[in-house]
Structures are given as C-alpha cells and as structure tokens.
Length: 539
Image (tube, rainbow, N blue to C red):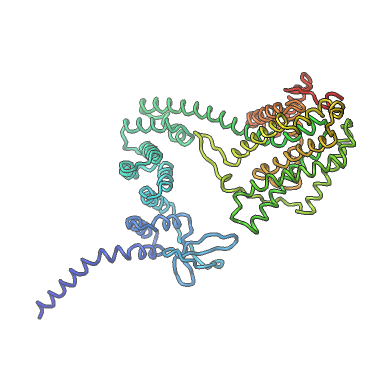
C-alpha cells in the first residue's frame, strides 16, 4: 500500500513537472503584471525583469506605461489599467486585454510608483524588448534610446542585436549606441575607445560633441588627442550646418514675405496705389481657409486633407472680388493722388477688420494642418518642417504663374500697356477701366492666396494683416516698384539678412537695421534693385 502511494506521488510529481512550463508560459505574463503593485521597489524590479523575459508582445507597452506613470490600479476593483487623457477626461483601458474601462473619476485610481533605480531597470528592459521588435520604427527608436542611455551593461546586448540587424539605418544607430556605451565603460580598452571616438566623429552632432568633450582632458594622450581632433571637426561641421540652417530659415521667411508682397507689387508698384488695406485682403484669405475647414469638419471630415486645395481658389475669388469692389467703389476716383489713396484704403482696412470681428469674433481662430503639412524631417543636421517647405514651393508656384499671366496672356499684355501709357492704350481700344479693376483684383486675389499659406504658420485673427503690411511695402520698395523679379530678390534677400542678424541683435533690432539699410539704399537707388516703367513713374 505504501509502495502504491509513493508510486502515485511520483507520477503526479512528474506530471506537474511536465505541464508546469506550459502553465507558466500561458499564465506568467498576466500573473506577473498583476503582481506589479505588490511588495517593495526591490520586489518590483524582479517582477519587471521577469516580465521582460517572457517575450510577450504586450510586455514593452506595459513597461512603457509603467515608466511613464500611466499604469494605475482602479480603487473600485483593484484591476490594473492604463490611463490616458481625452480632452479633460481621464480614460482607462484594461492593462492586459486593452478593453475600454470608461472614464475614471478624480482619485478613482492609484498610480504604481517607481523610483530612479526602477526607471533605469525599465528603460533597459524596454530597450531589450524593442531592439528585437518586428517594427523597424520601434527598433530604430530603441537604438536611439540606447545611445542616449550610454549604459556599459547594454554593450553585449547591442552587439548581439547588431549581428542580426539588416536595416542599414538601424545598424548605424546601433553602432553609435555601442560607441557611446564603450566611452562610458571604465573597463573598455584604449583601442575600443578610439574606435568609439571615430564613430562619434562621423555622427558629428551636439550629442556626439557632449560625449567627446570630457575626453579632451583624458590622462591617456592617445584618447585626448583623438578626442580633441574629433571635437574640432564636429565644431566646424556644426558651424557649416548652422549657416545652412540660417539660410533655410531666411528662405522660409522670404517665401512668406514674397507671398505677402507680390500682390502689393501689382497694386502699388505697377498701378501706383498705396493700398493700406492689402493686409486685410491677406486676412480675408486666412478667414476663408478657416471657413472652408469648418464646413469640411462638419459635413465632410474625410476631405480635411484637401481643405487647403479647396480653400486656395475660394480665397483668391473672395479677396479678388473685394479688391475689385475697392477699386470700382473708391480707388478709381483717386488715381494720381497717393495721399488720398492712402487715407481712403486705410479707412477701408478698418472697416474690413471690424466686419471680420463682427462675423467671426475678436479671438484667434484655429486652422488645422493637413497631414501632408504636418511633421518635419532631418537633412543632415538641419530640421525642415513640411509646412514651411510647402509654403516655399507654393510661393514660387504663385510667382511663376503670375509671371506667366503678365508676360504671356492677353490680359497681362493689356495690364502692361495701360500702366506704361494709359492714353495710347485707350486709343488702341483697350478698356482701361476694366483693366484697372482686373489688375487691382489680381493683386488682391494673390493677397488672399498669401492668407491661405499664412494660416498654417500664424494666428488667424482680425489683426493678421497688420503684421505683414510694413514688411510688404519694404520688399516692394527695395526690389523696385512694379518689378516682379525685384520682389522675388528683395523678399529672399531681406528674409535671409533678418535670420543672420537675429542671433546677434535680436528680432526687433534686426528689423530696424534692415529698415535703416533700405532707407540708405533708396537714397542711392530710388527705383530699387530692378527699376521698371509704370504709371507712377510716368506721372
């Protein structure tokens, strides 16, 4: 009898040993996650290490939620949830199943706390999990995180991952992470550290410079010399990239100035009309964009990415129509009297501002960025945002279309004829009044297009146009009144000059210095960079 009992016990024990691994594999992750709130910080560190060893697909997201302070225990039923913000509400999702648990009341949950030691453990564990993740984006992010951590304990892991990684960009990031970790390793050989310095020298950014600078004071002459050479090269590279970044910022500002000023180059430069309402025409284009987006959000949200393409022609028509109305109703009676034109259009600008305030209110209005204008990309050590890049391309497209209209179309030929010799053009049968209205409307319509672009980078408010009217006149005067090419050259010249001076003088003083330069310049060249004949010249 005793023999049978012992035999049965051994059989049961053997069965338990055989099925235990399968039971652990099926239940360990859930059980370990549920154990996170229990015990002290040291106990929690052991649980974190065990969670990372399970290899469960949910492990990285769970540990990330814990690291970011989003893993909570609901007080109502002690269940684990991941919380997130949705507007002003706090939403909970089950930490294991992802099931939506609804809104969490204030003080309805308790955060699972971590200390600095646990944060280091979590970052290392998340790194181990994500370095082998199937998604290359997450692997790249993990490699970059490993570079910033510069932890010698991760060198073996990084080497093992590097052997199997096939993506060239990720391999480069892993190599840089190994180099950063080797420089932080007190036991690394001089040869390893020299190799690491070479890798970081090629990286050439501020983070590499931060890692290499302390080595210049190293007791090892070879390390100190290699680090000093690398630091010098990186600083030279950073200066060159800094110049390139300033040029890009200047071109970005120049594209905005070009859009704001190119319509004024027609109304002021060609027609000789000082249109103080030009900024308000830009504002109308921005508010047209806002109205189009509001309509799309309410009725056709799936078309939001097309909103700017829909708004652009509408803004041109709205601003152009208002421009024709201004010319027919007021400006045509004031040709040849620039002071009266200035006062009249200034009064119109105040009327337009108040009209917009009455319709849309005085507060800023939100105009969203379509997905294709959101985000940025790296070019070397430069950061280029998509919205600025598209605005630059849009400004150049508007410029060349306008140039084509003026040079290659019948209406453009008539515009140039009327502005150069009005009486002869009338004798040739050209309807000069109609041409005046169309010319003013064209300049106003382009101002509306400028408003579409500016709505993506500036606040849409009744005062939007006032920010650009002075700069627009400066561009037109500097480039040469009526010269389209002069407007292009002046816009980018002043934009780049501003961005190079701002680091030394500040934004306000830089604008003052540019204004002083333009005043001195027009003393020598009153007609600007590119002088042309126009009505203002002939009269």
